[in-house]
Length: 527
Image 1 (cartoon, rainbow, N blue to C red):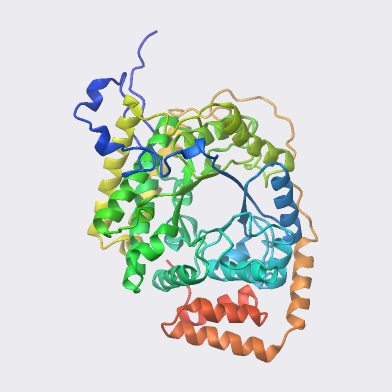
Image 2: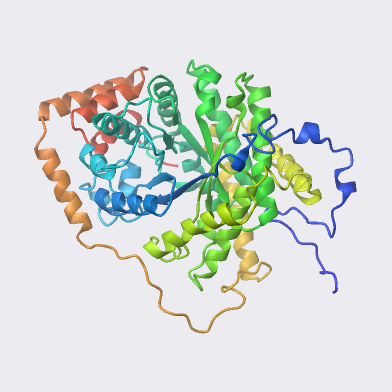
């Protein structure tokens, strides 16, 4: 067979040689670069046994409509063998608006579940074993409110805050970079985040207080190298902000977690996960002088790449998701969500959600890739890629440091500009057919069957608004006003915000009302 005229490149533009051999690792020290699984620098995984002890948490992301519908989907997935919950919230909830707000019209329950009040949170969590199952909540600007709602409902059900476990995303910097569901300006947002760190260290010790997310950076069009570099730069900013707020690094750093995207370039993705662990160990050891080994362990969740899914020939997405999930497992993920094959068309149907979960289960129970930690260790290709991904990512971090750190670089638009250029180059490569997307620009079908899509209930929004109005009508108005005034007073001072927010929820204030109180003090971010 003839050689290709040009050497292939990874998604990050790393050139792949015709052959890798021992010369590519000349002078490479496995003791320095790898260590053992569960030992510094954690390239091979954060736990010594990895999946030989137990599999990763199979945490399927779900949430739509009202609280009852999402509760039913949670139970469906748990019955199918899911081992952790992951909740999506609708845009009004993410942006701090109640369902009856004018800006919420047309968006209630569409891309996640609508949660306005403690009543909604009670319905969302009804009959779930909160002392046994961990819950991830993809929420950022309103993360403190949703977390406290969860804690209060658990307490009402006899589960103490020390018994609950899970994760809130709580990563506002990536919202400014890539996703857009921010409310307040960056610096007040950083204050809320560090207040969450402090509150949870005292009251919810088993909760991951932040999921520092590269996922949405990648969805916006970044390369794998940019995903890891910009995310770690954000993490540096969070750690420094918490230290500046008076927290000891080893008090909060063990509960930091990360969230990566899984894409199709199989070996680069494995290298990305491995490089990220090694870099975090270096950052926490050399930059922040962390002492607790758990402070230096990059624990992460992975979700397969939504932006890689195609509306054309959607069944092809099953193969894409399988490759992405397998790379995440080979790279040592702690939990995993696999996308439904129909997600380029709608919310996942039950059939698609079940197939996505079964994909994980087949990898975990039938493939044999879990039988030893880091099976790719020592591969000429993977170790070379791991080193190169790390080298290029350090270059980005150094550039961000030179601008004054992640917040200053965001304010200057640096990360956004870099991602925009990468997204343009990717789209151009697809349009020019330099990059083949099966079923889109090659192997196209002349006709396709009409897909089955997830149905949207037209009565969802009016019913949710009606429930919220009943909730507001049956409150002590004076108690609500007093509690909201206390939230504003705390925001104007320096005390931890979560205590006044918790009191407001006990007084039956809604998510939107609490967010409005904070908006009055902090303002709204406009790029």
